[in-house]
Image 1: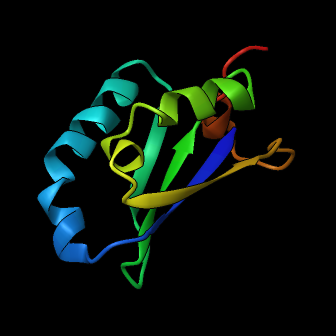
Image 2 (image 1 turned 30 degrees about the vertical axis):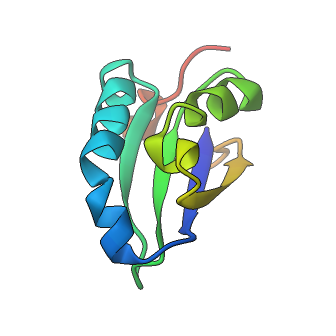
Length: 97
């Protein structure tokens, strides 16, 4: 499991101007099952994506496709974690190693 934290480097007006391609990028990886949740941080200085993947490199490679990354609009922090305490419903989110 991975938590991806985006921190905006530009104004929210500039972020909003590029939101449609970013949402299309997110949708691609929701459809593949890689992204399971995402949203804006409060205060609105970035966002969070919850993802599943086999390796950190796989997730980092996927993030290279994000228009926010390609246009230099946000910095990214990828945090890998092993969920050791969780609800049974959470098990369905994890992919086999």
